Length: 254
Image (tube, rainbow, N blue to C red; front, side):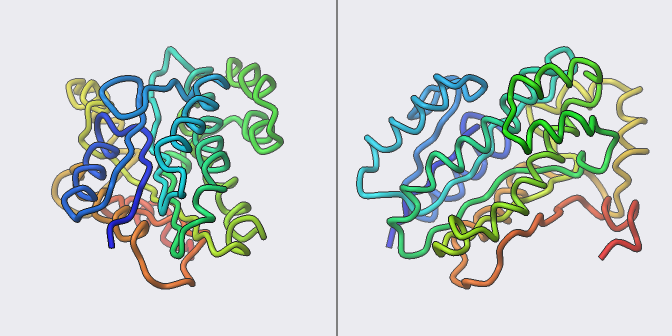
């Protein structure tokens, strides 16, 4: 039976690859992005988040079966926007659509986290994020703007771990998990691959044990599994799909 899946960040990169994968499998995909999708919304703003939630409800009044919170940016010159979209936009997506997921007989939700969470972060910003203090978080990250992306992903990972086992999520039968991609060749990372200096830094911060970096379709394969799995027992996990970066950098982590 076809399932209805909402994907934010559906216009490009991992989101687009996942949308294509699910549609090919017969699922109905409702895409959300700044342009070129079913729903146009800026998840960096409260108004955009609210509009997205309302429009999904209008398009799928009987409920939805899955959500991928995939919208995100990585722009060093936009630290406030990075926190607003990557953390607060993702959390608003998941929490805002949770009531619609509750109508499904097999509801699943996935957030795109990242191995970047292992990099230096702003502890004060993470704390503000987890406290739900968006204004405070946006103010704090301006003190450490270079760490905005890693900070947003660490905060999202910690939020996910806490939320997944709560009565509102697991207690309602909604399985919430995350994927932690390493370096993936997408439009967002293209500028990095075109910069020899950045390539050298990537090799240090994200060492891999396989040949070549990931394609978006490879991440989509894992997301498709998490959104469609039949079991009721896998939840609260951040599944790293990183070519071995995590195992290389943290060999004693279990």
